[in-house]
Length: 241
Image (tube, rainbow, N blue to C red):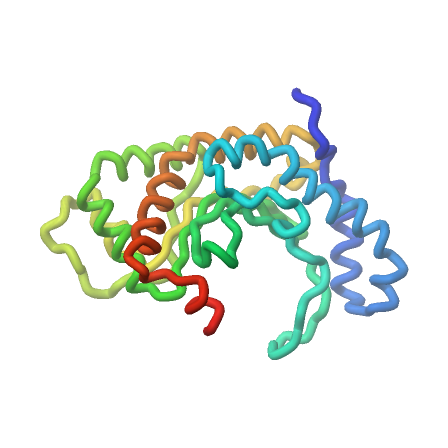
């Protein structure tokens, strides 16, 4: 096992995060703030540090700032119905800087009190834009199927939160049709074995999966850059919403 900054997220730290969420109290949070930082926030940032070389090799425009990439323990509840201020789950994104590349595909890692997961996601705030992915699938079917196989080899499961009800491409090959209905996509892995995030072997696990799934990230990025080059995705429009 290689030497990494990340030494694991321990059960007692996850338990404290849950207690902080249950109490939902600024006083409780302030009392345990340093413990939460050292047990939760710092290890999450260390994951980014340990994966940064690989992520920049996958995409040299990837943001690898560990502070910006990791979620906060406390939530901004302004304008939200849910007024609970503290989280019991944490996540991090491996992606291009969102202010310059809104809606870009991203890798992620997350954990909850009972499970952890990671994967690769491509969502766009205008679902019609996702037809650029469809176009590339139809233009390069072998490349697409190879990318899907790479995700399967990485242990990822295909998921789609929203699909077109009507078949848009009736003449497409059958093996492509499930993907040509999608308005978004993710390829993800999840496990209830939280012990596996308790030491630095998690870094090797993430490195291997993210690297194997690289062909899908590259496919998504090509579609995304086509949209940007066509002027369909503009940062100023995205942040005006």
